[in-house]
Length: 339
Image (cartoon, rainbow, N blue to C red):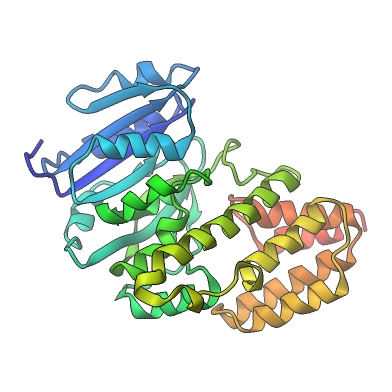
């Protein structure tokens, strides 16, 4: 390994013995001496640690189970590179991806993002990620979007690389259960965001994804998601105060994301969303930066889940939140199933 690595990759693992070797090998096989790799076993109770120890020449650590954010922070503390990627143990990098990433690194970059090819548990390709694949290097447009909406389109954890000072913000995120929360939305205020318009990694979709693979929507998970979003917004307000003025950031409750998740929560708890909540959400949808096709589809989804029997509305919501492959035909099947 180089004495001055340009990129650090931190892999954290909890009971992913079936996948972690693929994640590690996807990095080591690229044979980059300017990239440091750290693997943290977050107190796994399966055979993950033995799988990790099969690899020599990389830093490996085993800790008590404390959750992804703390495991990532521990791994981060063992690195020195100016840029860091947190690669989930069930995901992988594609050959040549590290070279492509490093080519885009410079001190003015706060975050790099790229597409991820979706694969199943066996590694079979099931589709590309759904977020924008446009190439850009931007800061001002994204800061305005965050101030207005609280979010911008960003890939899952494994599709991001952060400058080291951005990662330092994680030390104040004890409220969160994810590592890619506030740092994603703070990044544009700290430097440029670079989007690489190609899939450089693989995002594995399987029955242990937290998003809920085909299961009934979990009201507790959705409620926690809303709570974490509110906490991230409060934290973000503190972070951006010196550079953008905290008063310019939209209130969490006024964002489309918050209103959409609150709408989902009503359905998940077995309650019909109020007509006023539907109307409010549809009005907010019109102002969002989605394509006309996406807006039409979302409007139809919100309307149908408001009028269909609650069991069928919950089935539609479960399909909507599924991290796997979705299609219009799949939605139609659920709508008319049993009709």
